[in-house]
Length: 282
Image (cartoon, rainbow, N blue to C red; front, side, top):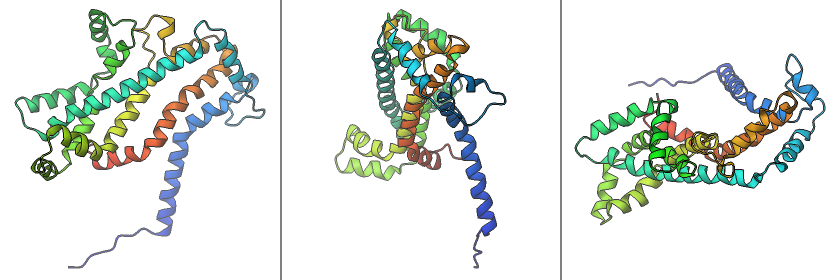
């Protein structure tokens, strides 16, 4: 039986590489433009057509941002703590709960399992705007309005992470779990020491999506006290101060951009591996 070797020509490799580089540059363009705008003086921000370079770079926008923050009644550190605290707790808690929910759905049989899986899939299609009113009613009924719990608990109720982890856990051979049971390991030991390390790419992907979502959330529908508001809320107040604050708005964009980008850079390999080996691949 003859086999035919599949290969690309040098020209084919060149055009594929060129296309990938062009696509990468296109994806990086918004980040680059945000950073460039934060370094522009006020007169360069309103050039038309817009320029993708800065003639007289300056840090004045960041200095003005610091000065405006210093005039605030609540310290900048407090806003930063609120955002970091809610983002970290929500992310860690959601990954843990989603993993525990996904494991039995992927590797155990019980009544109504198929129904629950269908409900998880259907829940993915609901936009946050659809569930905002029921969430507010629940948080109000529990007396959690104007507390961090009103942001953290709804963040842990998402279904996308459960579905993603369930798909990834489903690819783990059942023989591995059976061998753990034969060796005397219980369900908790199997889950904690075997399953979770094997699905690290998946839960790292969930970490990225959850952290980015919470970091960019204002929580304004639940939080009313100034000392409990998120960093993005405080920075958004600066950006709504008119054209004179356009440079400060650009600096705010860079400040809000940094944490998600840093988290993604440390986890990008896990994202690629997840999409390659989970049920989300085409």
